[in-house]
Length: 268
Ligand SMILES: Cc1cc2nc3c(=O)[nH]c(=O)nc-3n(C[C@H](O)[C@H](O)[C@H](O)COP(=O)(O)OP(=O)(O)OC[C@H]3O[C@@H](n4cnc5c(N)ncnc54)[C@H](O)[C@@H]3O)c2cc1C
Image 1 (cartoon, helix red, strand yellow):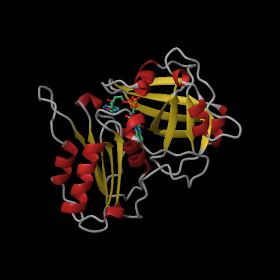
Image 2 (cartoon, helix red, strand yellow; image 1 turned 30 degrees about the vertical axis):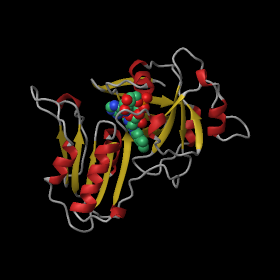
Image 3 (cartoon, rainbow, N blue to C red; image 1 turned 90 degrees about the vertical axis):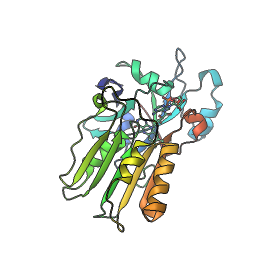
Image 4 (tube, rainbow, N blue to C red; image 1 turned 45 degrees about the vertical axis):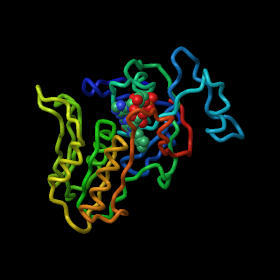
């Protein structure tokens, strides 16, 4: 990696470089990739081995040296020179990926598995053209939401809800005039919310009965409740709701079974 740029107190942008990134192709603004986070103090063994899939090669690495697999979103991709930005939520529970991002320095290495073609299945945002949009997510979904919002056409219409811990965790997003970005966080002095602020905010929002498209991501239980609300209470067609549990309370990604693409390994 070349840069570790603080965005807010609880988020860092890691910029990755490497010759193989010249082959990277994103299919959509919420393109996901797999990162292989090295174990502290251990060498990073190669994930690519001739004749093996990456998973076979990864599983053959002795457990004490085996890097952690984690799923992240490409916040930005540039080609001259090839660079990828990944925004990490530096969450308080501090798993290996979040810890790595907190202390990563220029010159540190990490393996990245990402696609080399647009039709790669490693993304979810695919609204029919012109659909009114609902985007909702938490701090882990903010990189994808930022990337989606900034990719929208000028005439896009919709509502965006982002739940963050404090007002200082808001980020500047450049949205088209018809897309309203709403930040959800307790005010100074308030108690941390106990319910599902995303669900409550969406409940209070006028949504079109037909033709809308929703993209929701964040903690798995919150996302499930929100999806149920859109389907059962608001009558949205389930095919118009893209919902992803990005993390799960009490589970690491190893035990929460996130789905990721499986196409091409690049080193950065
Ligand atoms: C498709 C997809 C795209 C994603 N994109 C991004 C992204 O761009 N940026 C980003 O920051 N995250 C993103 N995530 C979420 C990220 O993969 C998880 O948060 C992951 O668990 C972090 O790994 P870790 O090693 O830090 O923690 P883990 O070892 O997986 O978990 C350790 C502990 O921390 C808790 N935990 C994990 N994540 C969070 C969290 N976000 N907030 C609070 N507690 C948490 C767990 O419940 C567990 O108790 C994405 C997930 C998916 C499935």
